[in-house]
Length: 483
Image (cartoon, rainbow, N blue to C red; front, side, top):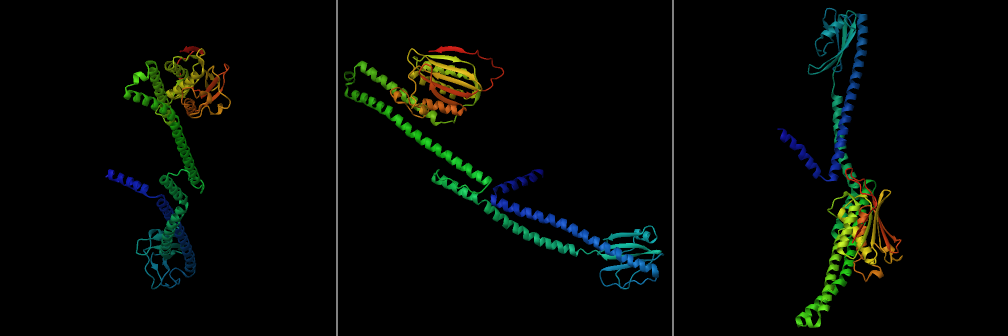
């Protein structure tokens, strides 16, 4: 039984959720008006009933005082009783012996109650009582008069209340119908911006046109919603533009190494088909060509990996954790030394804790070291320094190379940008762009300046974090060299 009883509210909830917002507003408006009319009817009926009852009782008291005055002058047995008018007031005299007198032709009143009898015997001065036991209810006022009492009564008339209730019912029905119409009109008018917003969203989804901003109209929540959607469209436009630029730049950067690789492979295939590979390419030339092919394949692999990493943006399954940036810098320096044995990295690191993604931060540090390694002379190490500075972790990577021209500084972190002096060096122009993206994702800042050794000084500032309580501190100023 209780299981079935619990299903009904859930069904009602599901039904309500399936209704449109316009239908909900219409039902809410009609229900609110119906409840308001019902409450107003109850309050008005109570007030009207009380007012009519007070008026009738006051009239009964006044009529009883007049009849009692006449009875005292003429005597209860001799007082002249007014004839019954056919409706309205009824009178009765209670004699000292308990008998009663009533006008001729008047309907019989209910028997004298015990309380009314005690009034006639002098126990109290008056009594107001109601009698609803008969088909017609009566309000009877008993007043002491001489050695007996007089009674004045009226039939309880509910017709004014009933007529008032019927009128309120008609008014309530009209109000409910009118409320439903008004609610529907208000809903239609109020939701018109939502309808236009929906139509615009459908049009954007159908045409894929992200340049069509939705007109900013309405106020309050509607305006905020429209502005939020316009901001979302602007973000989608920027994302699509960045995607297109990335594809165009990637196609441009891949074209040259692919062309060179294809020409070299075609040369080997053509010579092999002619059977002149050994005669046309001596061992030394063949070794050099194969080395070039290996270098081009490695360059393509690096470029594709960087493109993939860059295209992923900030989307990563790697979780954020509180880590010691000195460990990340050390791991990146070790990787740089294994990838390019000629690079010597001099580390001057201090334990600084940050909140971030370890692999992304290591990739950014590795790119900084790789970039510096391309410019540093063979006898000059790449210096990597890490320290705490205020509320920031400061990482500096400098080299002893020629430095960066002032004209190239604003574009150092742009995608695929390579200075004129760097075009003969290996690389794709994506390394520092990836550094910029990782630093931005961690709430930091990347800058470039000239180092004291005359080369480039790349600096990264990241927000520092409190170290875990159970982790021992690293000695300050730990110097190591990685080759």
